[in-house]
Length: 317
Image 1 (cartoon, rainbow, N blue to C red):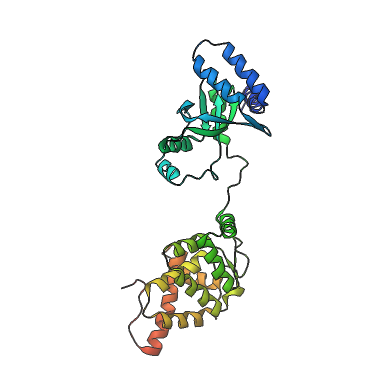
Image 2 (tube, one colour):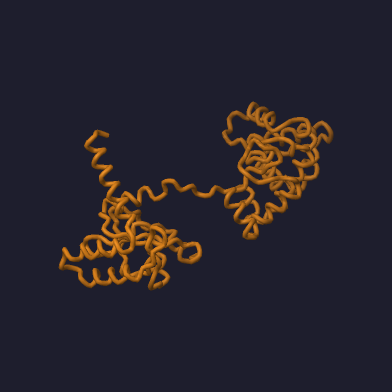
């Protein structure tokens, strides 16, 4: 970027920050100046001024209550309305909904630059008024710049942050997962270098959502009996999912399979298991599948030696 472009960008950013940092009184003064230059759209201009004058300043923001019908969307920089707007409407919760972010433009209209899907949901629900945070005098370009960088500096909660919050709130599935992990002395976080730590909370949730919590318990119990709680990576996705798939697909032979896998795991560790499974099944990218097939091979070898019966295949019958 050359010096001229840098100066232009810095000037735009400076103006954007200046406009966004206005007090309520400064916004009122700015809106009056804008309206004094125009003779069109007077009803909307008067209504916008009334809305702003009734606003409540909190910190460096001004909160206003705005009729839904007065809000506009600029499709030149906004995303097309997505199908999930129906879900937003069906699952609407005022406690979880942030205020819409709006701007009063030179043309006398109020535009939503953050929250168009929430606005569409509100219209679908037949809601008449909505809480907003207002700015005054931003151009279309400045709105678009704010829209494009609204996530900058914001760290979204990861699945483990959400798990922790769910447990605190008493959410059923995550609370049940924590209770089961507690029974086996396991923590739940993303640190894969720590022993006795479940690092596949998303997989665990899916198993519980399918109503298969007993399969998850079977896996944790097996690993506990195999003394794998002392290893890091013992409760990662590839191991948990491989054992879960075995438990799910081999109901009749499961006691025999469990004994053989426990006996084998006592003699190895997570790293060796993955290495050997990869050597045996290099054609598969899915590490969980490699481990599943390798463990079934171990079971089959023992079964042939001790029972001389038909092998358990890698796929359910």
